[in-house]
Image (cartoon, rainbow, N blue to C red; front, side, top):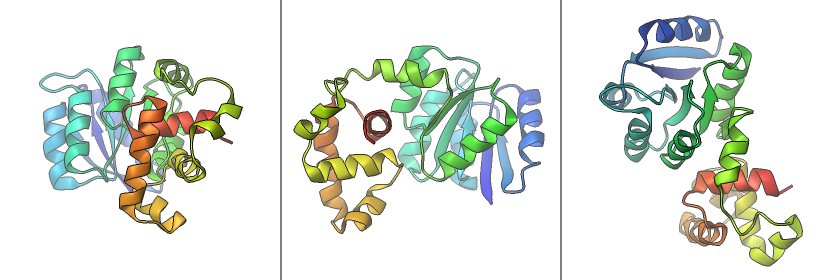
Length: 211
């Protein structure tokens, strides 16, 4: 069962979303919040698997709330669900630690699939969102794929591919029979080489550039 928390300042939207998602056999809506500050507080007590987070809300916006939740509880995944597709919101949300970004006009089937995908550890972006985010990844690696082998060691490529699959440091370490500390060191080098700020952006780059 995937335990969900809904965060949106519009009560009717929250209630409608809760009704739709509750029809799915593997979803359970365990809480609702009307703004970011309430979301942070509820996340502390309810510990949902996934938070569906709006962006523009009173008191505390979704980006700030996402960052706060992820700092305290990195195991909780955040899927942004909003009407706003501005580049700035997308980039800031992903940098704050969101695992995905969808627009509210997405079909219910697409939203349900995105929730399951995020729960499995993958990054999920709406069809109009991915190009906007990729265009912001100002990486020297945006050239031909054959340059990849000259950019990274074999081990770094292995780690980068696993990042692209949504694996955690612990899962990567277990897969490659190395320590989590070694994984962290490699990821630090990978981020510097790609000129990106966090592992989510590195994972997105890997999904786009590695077979």
